[in-house]
View 1 (cartoon, rainbow, N blue to C red):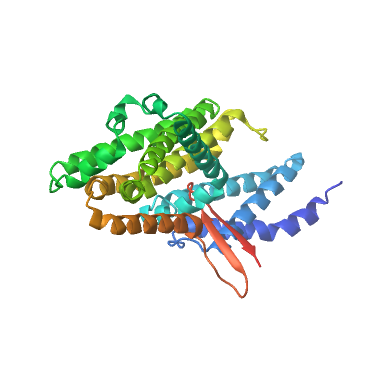
View 2: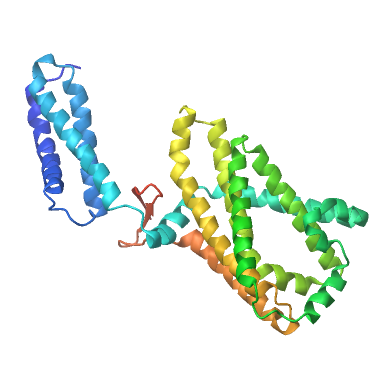
Length: 353
């Protein structure tokens, strides 16, 4: 296709001038507030179109001046795009938590679902093994949880008779729980570098332990104690661990590179910010879970069991409502617009009837 250069320049000149007005306004500080989404999309469109025009002009050696003008304009636009991203879309904790975290979670919900399924499959298998051969209990529960080796009913009776220690030393206990559980979540995620295999093994193995403990207490008729003990903090702690597994599976997929022609460093660049967002969200959940486990879950007075169970269920429902729906926007007549602020600060939108 032969390009009519004069007609091409006449046609594209208004595009370049409009882009230049955007750039000048940004350089002179006339655009102090964040651009509305439609205006930002227009700026990006003009930048991309001018870049495409420059590529076409490069084929004409006699148009060096026009090409130089476009090169300069595109470089200035590029700089303003990145300055805006850093200054206006920088890290804002509240927006990160309320918008970026749930939107990022939903983009990778399949990895979370697989992480949860692996854990639950391990739990079912652990319960099945213990049901078939109760003597395997000590082999299935690690020594660090040796306090679970005994009869569940004996432990329940002891815990219910004990006096709560008026929060003495519980600050230290809470801190140690937060630190330990966050390390577990991070280690589960980092294990994804082994093609995701180690992440899957860790999720499955931890599921086995939980399945054995739950079956042991349920078989002993201590289901109410078990629920009131685990649900208040487990409603946040377990989803946080699953989010660590979610991150690990994302890493594993990036290492393997299914369906991607990008090189490994480029694949990791694409998920880097999402990984940090998901792990940051898991850490926030584990902080709350540590506080609840230290100051509430260990309080074993039967009259408080209904309240503890209600709190745990409410937390679980609110958490998944938040992760499933937060960050969405609705506007327009009969149309739903979803705005997603990804963890790298870029906005995307989609419309559906």
